[in-house]
Image (cartoon, rainbow, N blue to C red; front, side, top):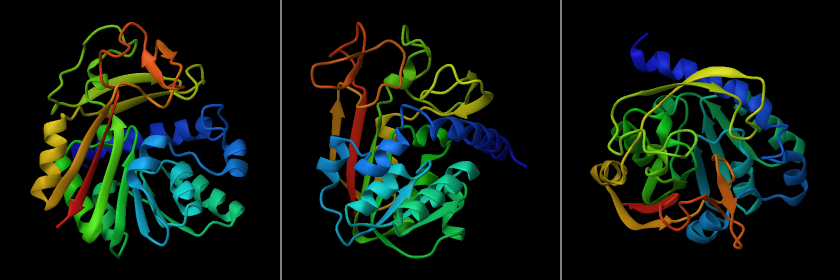
Length: 266
């Protein structure tokens, strides 16, 4: 087992623990979502646009809430995630709600060995690529699954946010990543007091690294957007604005919190 495999194994175990908390959490509100049907934020709904009749691949889909939300909007969906428990629950939700969907449990880098076909849209969002050490391999997977003219879309937390310590008080981590960041975790962003403990491994990636990896694999950047808020209350010391979004107290309007990229395969 190489070093990366050890990191992925630990992260998989951590996400299995998290999933058991998340699926019953107030943060995800699964029972409410079952009835109301959409967990996607206005950012991706606006920027991805109409998905009716399109084949959509959701990378690092967690337990499929957003994947199934795209299906309810008319997409033919496939989701992929590292966590056994997350994929098991995604399949349970799809079956319970009678939503056609395919879910694959594997490391993202290994997905071409587990899934065939090409897609109109490859989608990923919020807290995803920080679990991946090599973005060149990530972009290769994106390009592999996109049909010519297909769209890749990512909305994620801004690299500047990942420079801050867990308490959101000072700059702790480098903007230009590369080195693994090892942390001991208790609880989860969805329930900070949950009685789970685990070790996790992550990597920071700059916007230039993200964009250039996509360009190297034949994708044309359509836009890069940056937002000074998070649609989710998942960080310490957040305050909710009159727009309903969240910002770090004392840094409101100062730092970017989310970015999005749309790219087209040539």
